[in-house]
Length: 135
Image 1 (tube, rainbow, N blue to C red):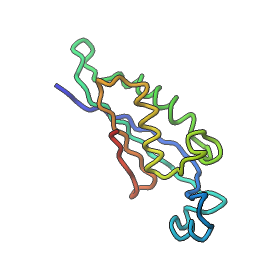
Image 2 (cartoon, rainbow, N blue to C red; image 1 turned 180 degrees about the vertical axis):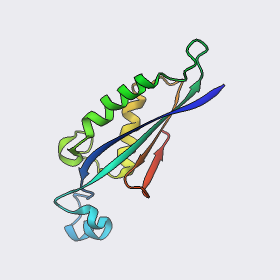
Image 3 (tube, rainbow, N blue to C red; image 1 turned 90 degrees about the horizontal axis):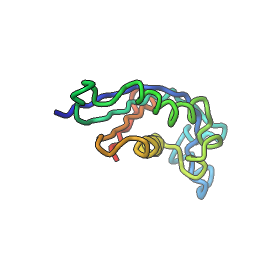
């Protein structure tokens, strides 16, 4: 039997969407207000989903306390209250779109979670704008 367990976390971060190879006008045309040179912020909501077998001894798919600690160490602590463009190595050369942020989060977690588990992350940038990445 396989089940999916989910852990929800949140973090607040600022960013600017822009392509350094484009003019300010081109960036504004494509990214709109999200290309503000002074940055803007979001209250991100993150759901991490792990699917796997239920352990007969514990009844767990995955220890939720361990998952919580892992998400906090790998995502919340490095990204919370940061300017993603300026304060994180991951986005110094990568445009911090919600798509790219979700992919970075997935890759960071995938390195720490056994391949026996299917991993998915859902990242909400706003109530209406979100992405899901499954690797």
